[in-house]
Image 1 (spheres, rainbow, N blue to C red):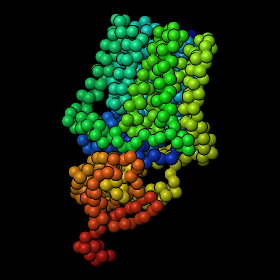
Image 2: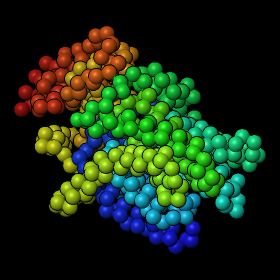
Image 3: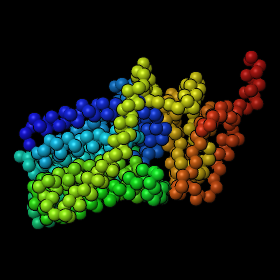
Image 4: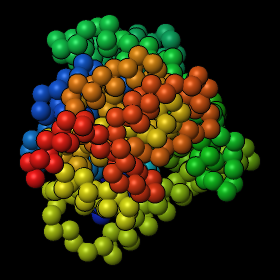
Length: 523
């Protein structure tokens, strides 16, 4: 494809992306997913070591990336969200470039880019490490698919592998799934007997291994291998698969429908690659289609860990270019039979159905952003993010307390819960000094973990405790644990209620009689 049409498609996607993704800066705070990234990036900036000073099931890449934004722009939600917007914008542009380069059709590339913007704009969860990993994974798939048409294909597959290795710095599980998917797609297009396919696989593995080893070596300079294996592999394998059950499709809840439509769409795209008409397509076109389809299928393994809509988003992001390429291959030249038309209508119908909800959400967010007045203090901690009336009351109260008083953010029942809200560590300015700043079911309700948290609260004389009403969700395995009131009992004995809201309760440490007497005498 000539360079100017490809450049024009990318330019259109980039400019529209600035408008459609801008509302992500203004959306309400996400206390859990966004909160732990904001607070841990702050801790990294101030010298804390991931996996050693705080628990995390994710590699440290996202924390260091947001910490770098803090260093440049200041400790603000806006700093983190600007990084997130840039990541999503680059994702749409990279996918547009890959489709434009392979399909040599500006309309197909532009359609793919716009659908990617719709999916990314409506996905929510700003700052989530999975989006940064997906940028690198989709970039790797696009680079790998176009390698055959380049003058130095080995360098391109090596670069693609390095991108997958870099993705492991942010989400090691997703990067591993994607690497297997790319190798499988390369074998399928090479038909197992092509030496060039095996060479491409070897260079891809070398690139991924080298970049992944660099990240691992950096981590091992600070944390032991045993600790990394425990937090990144062992604990997720033990406690997360049963975190939520797969919801049955409920027409009143579109989120449950998308969880089931994404795997169905992946099967349809993979089945279409077996059609004789599509098998006659150029090699790099088939490679691009298979790369994204296999990556989407591999990323569906996320649904075996957390079976909800947000974990179907990575697979959807890989499916959109695969489905657009499939529809372009069938229509209009190859749709000569009833089966071809049925497949075409099925692919287009699924693509529109999957894109409708995020596109509508993106449009509503954009309209809402246009109505909001300008925010004068752009780079304050709260930035441009919205808070509910109750959250405003809570934040105003916390910000009037001494920043060195110490704060622990917990839940009403530390035995059975859905999760805490670590964003209040960041917004209050008090910060977290405990190992479990993120309370994850199956980990934070273990006895030895609660004993460690209790000792940290006691030894550091934390003055305030924020308890969040976080009911145990259906399917959460922590609901089946024996009764454990170790931490709850300690808080009840040593703290008293200072402020009670609908969802939040603030506790303050009780003064011992001697301290109270001295304080009264000083008055």
